[in-house]
Structure formats: structure tokens, C-alpha cells
Image (cartoon, rainbow, N blue to C red; front, side, top):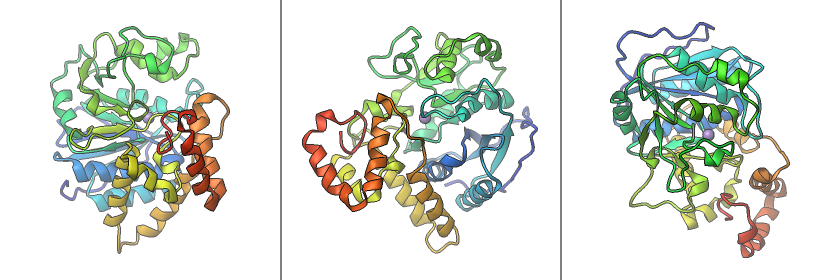
Length: 343
Ligand SMILES: [Mn+2]
């Protein structure tokens, strides 16, 4: 774990200054109020499994992350010994909500522009396992002509950009930014027709031809994986899609453990995080954010949200959830793919 760093809380509108040589590796993410608890678990997992000291910048679109949430996270980061700062980012009408994807996802463009030093962008719906910080070496050796470090997507990755998010060459949840000026995204966004996952499409348009490709282990998408291989674990697991491990009622987690499904990596990180808070005054507010995370997200129609709707139904059913899951598991081939543990 990193040594205790001085904690810096900054909520100014100004962007971070850059230019001085970074003493620590830098990790950047952005959240809204729905993602407070998952971010705390992620940062705890980075500390636990990392070998290189890092500092953290948390961006948020104006008005989407209350001061109380920032203060809580500040205390968590301080407890974990991580230097962190917050950046309040201007909202923009072009930053649209798409399905389960909040406008906060566009913050990665703003933060990439604001921080010209090398850094790692991580989606907050990820968890870090040993080896994750090896990506800093990949970023340090990437050129500004390559522009971006991204993870391979597995065998069915396509070389050509397509409007279907799962056909895009890379997923934009883990982005390694080398030092240098960023490519212009404003003009292409202004002229882009609305496609599925606008921001991810744009990243592929701008960077897929030149990017430096690294192992899929740095961005392992759980909808591509039914089971963890304990002998060859990913470095970063990414819970992409509308349904997330924190939406599953705790009473049903044993089914995940039986399958060793990729959600287990998040449950283990969460357990380690909660243990690290034992006997501290942070436990009570953490429990509150944890309960809030279970019902976070938005109920929506459409096939891709069926897994999320199922998890919300299980919450609503309370003690009846267990027998229902028992019945559903008999017909698991009809269960939406990626709805661990039922798939
Ligand atoms: Mn994501």
C-alpha cells in the first residue's frame, strides 16, 4: 500500500495544472452520486493489489456529486493513504444519457484535455487485481503519436469501427494517456449522429487506428467471461453493462461463489474494504452508501436492461428471491447473458 500522502481536497472549477514532473503515478476517474460506494471499493482494491504509489483525481459533472459525498470519499482516500483531488467539470448539452450510461462518461474527454501528463483513466465500475498497475509501464513507453493505450478485446474484436458498442475495436473503460496534447473531440462530436455509446464510438474513431494495444487482462469485460480462472486472473475486471455486482442482494451471493463468476472479484474487494474499516467511524456512512448502491441505476425497457430488471425484482421480492432463483436456474439458458450468478 502507498505511504500516507498528504490529502488535498479541491473543488475549484479550474482545471488541474500540469507540466511539473509527476512524482506519483496518476489515476483519474469520474463519478456521480450513484457511484460513491463502487468507487470506494475500487480505490481500496487498487491500494491492496498495487505495487506503485499513485495519486487520484475524481472528476464530476457540475451538480452531480453532493459535497457530503465528496467529503465522505475524501475521508476514505485519506484512510487508504491516497492523495486525491476533485475536479468540478462543466456540463454540456452534448453530454447525453444513453440507456444505463450517464453523461458522466463524457468526463473522460474533459479530464484527458485537462491533464496533459501521463495518466490512467479507469471507469468506476471496475475492480483492480494484482498486476493492474503494470499499465503505468505501458503508458510511460507509449508515444504521443500512438495517442492512447487500450486493451485488446479478445478474438472477435473487429478492426473497423461500427455503431454497435460490442463491435467497436476497443472498450473505453480503461484508457492509458501518454504525455502530450489530446486530439480534438469537440468538432467530431458536434457533427456526429447519435449512435449507441456516443463517447465510446468517438474514442474509437479518434484513436483506434494508432492506439497502443495491451493485454485484454487490463480491461476484462465481464459479459465476455462466465468464470474466473484463478490461475490466470485478469488485472482489471470491468463490469460493463446495466447490471453490476453491487445490485445483487447479498443473500444471493453464495451462487456467485459456487460458480466463481467474475462478480466474485468485486465481492472479495468489497469484503476487504469493509474489513479495513472495522472499528473506524467510517463504517457507518459506508454502510449507508452501500445500501444506496444496491438500488442505484435506472429501470428501463429494452433487452439489454433485462438483467438489471431481474436484479431489481430480486431486491423487491425479499425472502422470496431465493426460491425464485432456484426455479430460474432450471431454465438458465433463458436468463440474460451476463446476469451472474444466474447465467
Ligand atoms: Mn464501465
